[in-house]
Image (tube, rainbow over all chains, first blue to last red):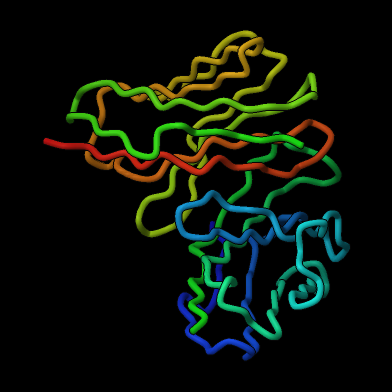
Length: 117
Length: 114
């Protein structure tokens, strides 16, 4: 089965510019996650969707970050305007989970490496 | 708030030998899940092993096993018969049963030498 797809793989922008990342989860997976992984740290959850609804966005910097999951499939994460500290790898993951099902494995995509200059 | 601590930034093991990676966590929850994820240089995170807190038996997956000490809030990963392909970053992660939200540690970089 196809894995989680993400694009682009790399992006370099200047501060104050905007950028968008795209994620296509594994077919049939209800839950989709966006993580931010800063160099030298573990991933940090930004937002969690179940189908097309937001389950948890408590750690999403809403003044500059936004995300949507139209039709409960693909998702986009946007940063506008970008800051230097947004340089990180942005990981998308998906799982079968409906409701709270922490035992369901999260499958990760290859990530998008963002560099903000 | 839940926290996950990995105190070993880097570890090294010789091929065919055994290595143990440490992880401690802090939570007030009584029921939760713990995970070890592997992240090779390609950056694709892969689940290595999973432990349910209410199970006393330690999880095993082929060459990978855990030592889960609930009272001590410790969750170490043992890799037996290490192979070159085991070289990667290893992340310990936690989630309560009330949510599907992973909290990760800072990772341990494992090198495997000949």
